[in-house]
Structures are given as C-alpha cells and as structure tokens.
Length: 633
Image (cartoon, one colour):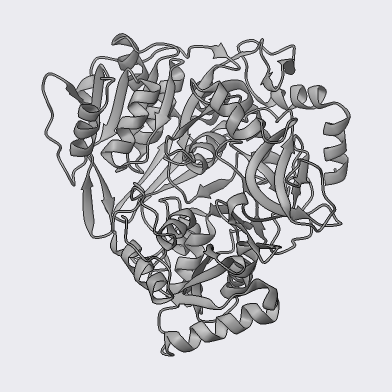
C-alpha cells in the first residue's frame, strides 16, 4: 500500500475508512454510525458505540493468551530499580484498585486526579480509573500547589491518587505538602485521597482524610470493566491557555482507542512483538498516548523510564535502555537529544552499546531543528522521524507513515498529513495561500476520531480558542508552510512569527540557523518591539560543554550566520550566550515568558520554573542590550 493510495482511500469515504479502523478495537457495542455532524462545528464520532479502554489495553490480551507477555518495563536509574510487569500481573493490580475505588462510590463519569511520578502505580491508577468508567486527569507530579488547585476546582474530582514524592537528580520532591496546600486553596474538596508511599519519602497521612495505597485495596480482587459511550471522556488533560486559565482538553473514549491503534500500526510501525519507548512523562499527552495507552492497546511492551537523558548517571542512559531492553523505536523530544549532544557531542557513549535493535527514532513536542536531526542520523544510523501533533489531537497530524510507506525525509519538515487531516495554510483573512508562503496552519473540519470534541465544561471557550477565527477550520496556533510536494513545515507558534519592517519572518527559521553552529547546543529567538522596524529578533544560545572559545566570539559568529543564511532583512544583530533556557517540564521553551521579560511586563512566574535564576540571567542579558528596563517578576 502506498501513502497516497491510503490517504485517497480516506478522502473517498471517511466514514467507511474509520469504521474499518474501528475493527481493531474490541467494542461492547460496535458503532453503526461513524461521524455525527448534526451539531457542526461540534462533531462526534461513533456515537452509538460502547467500549471500555482498560479492557482494550489489558483484559483482551490476557484473554487472547498473552498474559505472560511483558506489558511494562520499569527502569528507574534515580532509585536503582528495574522491574518487568506482565499483562496478567497488570490486570490483577488494575482490578484490585478499580474494585477498591468502586466500593467507595467512585463511579462512571466521576473524575479522579492522578498526581504521581514515573512509577508503575501511575499507569495502574490511570487504567483502574478507566476500568470503572470514571475520567482521569493526570497532573504532572510536583506541579505547584496553585496550579493543582486550579485543576481540582475545574474538574471537581471525587478522588485524588498521589505519590508521596518524586525523585529528581540530587533531590527528593515531596508531593504530599503540595497536595495538602492545593486542597486547602481549592474550593472543591475531594472525598477520597490515596497516597502511594515511596521508600525515598514517607508522607505523613491524615487518618481522617488519607488512605495508604495498600490499605485502601485490602480485601478487593476484581471488578468487571464498565462500558461507556464512545463520546464519553476517558480523560481530561490540561494544557496552557492564553488567559492563564488552563484548558481542559477532553479525550473521547472510542475515537481515542481507534486513533491510537491506527497510529501504532500505520505511523510508528509497531506491533505486539515490539518494545516501544516514549521517553516522556505520564503528565503530558505523549505519556498518555504513547507510554500508556497506544502500546498497551496494540499489545506490545512499553518502557517506563524514571530519569533524565543526562545526569542519571550520564549521557549514555538512553543507549543503555535501548540496548538492554531491545527497543525497536524511541520517541522523545528534540530537547532530550540536544541535552545529550551538548554533553557528548562526539557520541562517545553511543559506542559502548549495541543499538542494532533500534529501527527508528521519532521526535515531537517542539520543532526538530535540522542540526539535531543530522546529529541523530549520523550517530544512530536509523531514520529520524520528525512528526507534529498537539495535546488537542492526541495523536499524529503530520508524519512519516513507516507502517504504510516510508517516505523521503525532508529535514525541517514533519512530512505529510495523515489520513483524517486536511492541512491548510491561511492568511489573516482565512484564505488559503500559495505553496511556499508562510501563514497560519489550520485543519479543515471535521477533525478525525480521537481529537478533542470540546473543552471540559467550556464549549464557548473551545469555539473561541479554536474555531471562530477561521470558520470551517480548527486553528492550530502554529505557523508554517506547505511545499510543492505537500510536505508541511511547522516554523513557529503563530505569535512567534514577527514582522520586521513589513517582512513576516519566522523565529524558528532563525533558530535553525543558530543551531547549525558547531558550538551551539540549544537556542531560542524571540521578537521584541523596535521603534523603527516594528519588531526585531533577539537570540539566546547555550554553548556546548567543553568549548573553550569566548562566548563573545561565538555570539558574533552566529549573527553573521543568520545574516548569511536569511539575509539582512532579518535584522538579526543581538544574541546572548546564557547557561540555560527556561522550559516547561515537557521541554518546550518558554518564549512568551522571555518576551514579557524583554518588554518589562509583569507576569506570574510559570509553575514549570523551579529556579528563578534562569529568568534573572535572561533579564540581565536583555538589559545589556537596552531591553528589560524594569524587572516585574
């Protein structure tokens, strides 16, 4: 099968296409209808279907004789723990927790917040919640109390399941004090709190309110999976919003299962005999889709890693995991590879391990700059597949479908739209523009199964955020272009396209140039106001370890590089070498925060920043060039 044939097959009859894909899922009631557009632009899929997520991820594999197969490989260099959990063992653990929750009144449609580190119990909790038809909302372990409180008040959970702590290199982060403070701040008070005690930190439990993980489950053994409607939420996942109030992305149960099963087979080329590793966190959408659900839905083995790409203990950690567990495909963020490259630019640690099992590397979560891709290609000698998707979609929008037909890799592009997506580039008036021109990336409605149908209790906000700006389209918030071969290029967030003296320029394109310099490990470019030109770019670079040349010399060299590659039109004259870039915990650079510092705007320090010295360094660098006249954070 060729990609173009597959894409055309979807175009010819989308309903037939997705009903066929739905056959890879075990339904309590198979849907007779695919798309319901009666409430357009609010769409739904498989309305009349009934299904259970946990059954598809665990039970059916045990019933099909795969109970002894390893479902989860847990590797935690920060605690020195290694563990393998079979599908049968997973089913026993999930059953026990699900039955205990049900006996205490947690039922279909109730919400459960899960606030845990990267441990098997986090996955068990997620699956147990779905087993009884409840809805989970995973909050990144160690997230600040006020951020957790906002999520508690928005989704109003009946139960919170938390770990006692998380382990960071060199420190233990206690979760229980953060949880207690969040509940104190929140208006909504959860009825049940379950705490998993880790050996590294024993949390003090309140006898009247808190339950120990093991005591909570004593006397319970099993409960049957509860069928839910295909459009009933399997989870709510909060993503950042422009107003500061996080947006609760809703994931529909039926489409979620169908899209992930389709993607594992057709995009990632992964089947039941494979080991798949998504080096992310269960608190993010990558963790939901590709640590937990997609690998288990197709019956393969998933790797759960509690550590960092560097420092736990060295830049060879990823290669050890791949070699030791025979990982076929690794999926991670470009920032992880930049960190490894910065510590081990010559790939000396790679030579210590047999990586012959590795067939492909997938990158997503941020733009995969060409320099990082070229480095990974050279070091690993496997296809390096950039692909693009969002929390809102839950799975791949644009990618290279290895399971259908491996396509030519154009470095800098995540490749081509997957079936289900018509990608358009629009001008400010919502008109499609010519190939090769930069504009707003939008997706023609309806979106395919598994994508968000709305925001949790906020349909008006959903329409305002995604649908109103370009009627008939979903607004991605990303800017880019499509080339003559149909390859999509994601250049920046829409608000990262700057206007320099009337020229629309991508800060992402400038970052690509900066990243080509041999001494640059990471970089970011932001736009700042300029009285003459409207906006001008300012760059920040982090220099590779072991480089002995002066930062001032390297700054001058990268300015010349941008002038050479993009031209004087970019007005790129200002760059500062700094030690670190401010990032979210998933690795995305907080460019909007950097812009606020440059503009002397007041803002609340993002919850992902646990060390304000990063922001102080940026403030001082900007002040050196006449920006950031006042410090308002």
